[in-house]
Image (cartoon, rainbow, N blue to C red; front, side):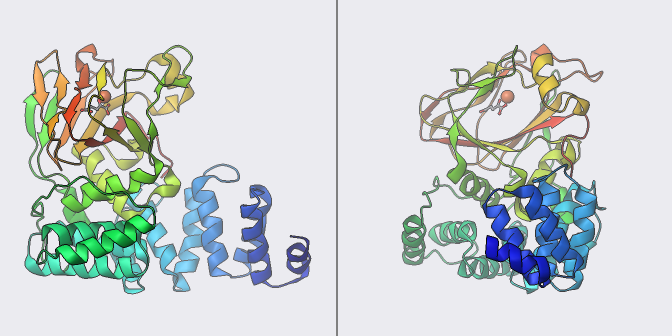
Amino acid sequence: MDALQAAAGTGSAEDAFRLALALVDAQRMDEAQRWHLRAAEAGHPPAQIEYARMRLYGMAGPVAPETAAQWLQRAEQAGHPAASELLTNIALGGAALPRDARINERLHRAVQADFQPALLAAAIHFGRKPQAEDQALCMQLLQRAAARGNAVAAVLLAERLAHGEGCEADADAAADLWTQLEANGASRLPDFTLPPPGEPGPPRQLALEDALRPPQAQTVSAMPRVAVIDRFFSADECRLFIASAQPHLHASQTADPVTGVPYTLPVRTSSEASFDPVMENSALRMAQLRMTHAAGFDLPNAEQLTVLRYAPGQQYRPHRDYLPAATLQMDRPHAGNRARTTIVYLNAVEAGGATEFPVPGLRVEPMPGRAVVFDNLFADGRPDPDSLHAGTPVERGEKWLATLWIRQRRYRHW
Ligand SMILES: O=C(O)CCC(=O)C(=O)O
Ligand SMILES: [Fe+2]
């Protein structure tokens, strides 16, 4: 560190950048951010990207997505695909950058530069389309991302090969991939298959907005309002969320309604993982944008997405998703309460695990890719106690679920 500091004091932008990276490793975030800024100002694109990331995630001081976007645009002009992918992520939120046609251009540019997260996002996009040429393109993009070391893309590829989705089934190729994946710490996925959702739009054209027109919602209860949307996620998207959550799973906790302190309690006996902003990528954000749109809100209103995994016997006892006043005070009260919830079942449960709404007497069976959208508040914003619901015990197999709790007003910075 001393040598790096001495070099950076008088040296090049590259020296400043190297010092900043070492300071991040040493958890000295304020100093790291200052040195990244110095290198960024001296025209060092990787430092511009790292400085932007620190501002985007608020690693040393307040979150500043507009500042981050300015630096990323400079790095993008210098031809760095990581900057284009991050700008795509910011623009998908529509808060700090407009959600316009540049999203597709940027993702396209990052795909052409073989940037892994962009390859994954584009693969999933084409994989939602039923045409054979889009399915073939999806397979090619997954292969490219996997070849560059993207483990999630390799998981998606292995499952497509195992099930013959968008390709001839090839059990040997799937088994080979899984052998490599398991050697690198990946866990097996629940076994299910789904046809592509049948997204509209011309083939072979990258147009993320196509994915914002999900299939028709079916209203299954008027009071409280509950709607079901089948084939809302593709098989790839279900697997994306499971594979992204797997390394981060821990026993679920619930906040004490009086003190707000989290604790483990039998209300929710599942395991779960919440997606920190640092974990986000354009594929995950695209799917979450669709989840908020289906609920009539925009992405920044959503809390961090949570993936839940229930083993046999595990359940989420009857509860309401809106937050008691004390808990709300502790977590961005300016965003208001949880107006709506969008859940998506991510696999096929062998038996049990239905979502139950006892007041309207409703039971929704889990089906992979099926979304359920429901109101937690009355139209005037008061909590609706009739929104009571439960995840009934899983009897056989596992149940995987993505949950997005959506606030009345903006919750996320971007
Ligand atoms: O597991 C379920 O079906 C319900 C999940 C739920 O209520 C929630 O995530 O808030
Ligand atoms: Fe709930």
